[in-house]
Length: 399
Image (cartoon, rainbow, N blue to C red; front, side, top):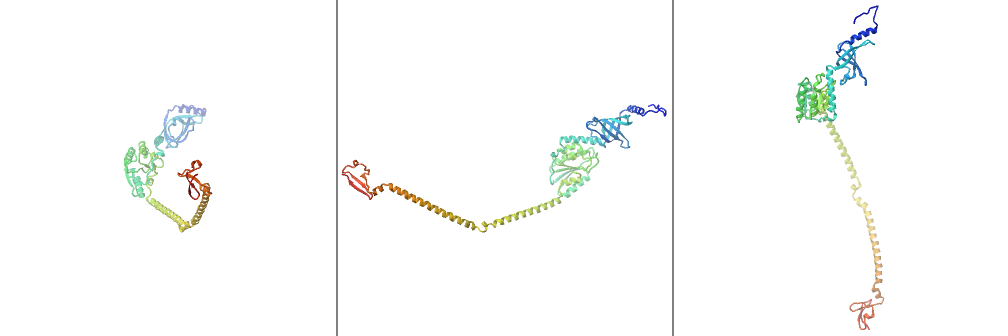
């Protein structure tokens, strides 16, 4: 840009701005590195804006980009990025900015972005669902522990777990807990412990560390192996700032190896206290039950039927006597009525009897062979007949 200005012929501001803009626009696309300190991405807008600051100096620049540049990128303030951008100069404000067409997370940011993509993938498959998580046994006899060689995590878990439950047996598998082979070694140890029928719970423990050191515990192969294990798995990585994905897949997440020991087994001392309290409550409940039964039995014994059983007979004797008298009276009345009826019937029968006719002086004539004679022609003169009188039979002969 040839400088033809002078004190007598100065350039107007807009001319200088136009010349600067023309010079800036001749610059090619460049790659910038910095930290995102501000991000403005409005829903529905086609453009997004950000401020990129140098990580070593107090220098920052404005970035403008289409929102499509951010697709699939979980960009957040604080992330370190590498940006392909072209310088632009805004003449109205005399401000330099950059138009970005590519943004990549740099260093740990890229690692975290990859972990986020894996987290979403496994969440979609249901590996984090509570329904698939297995319950831990109350007081396992044998526990599997996967941890670093001679690590503090191993000491924390074994010492506290055995202090809480002295009879506990711990099968320790020492593996690398960081580096390129760590994930595969943990998977191998997990498979071996999972196949052991004596092992009831498996703990994967490490005493925290930097995000890069904990990457093996977000390895996809390891996560799928934990999800497929038949034995419940506890994650005890002990890193609060960045949660390894193992914490989400495991059946239980412990904040630290020490916390894992507390989750593994109950305290024998606490259980003894609870047992004593339970026995005391049971004894008190039994005593109260026995007292109620004694009181109930005493109430039954105080009833008249048990104190003087004869009262039952005495109370019923008068009733029985009355019923017996009623029965006797009923029978007598019945007999009297029946006797009177028989007498009446007897009188009627007597009145209708042939004997009554004979008693009035009449006679019944029959032949010798017993045939009743009702006509003279049945007994011609000289026929022997029998006359039945009231007092007996009289033979006679007809004339």
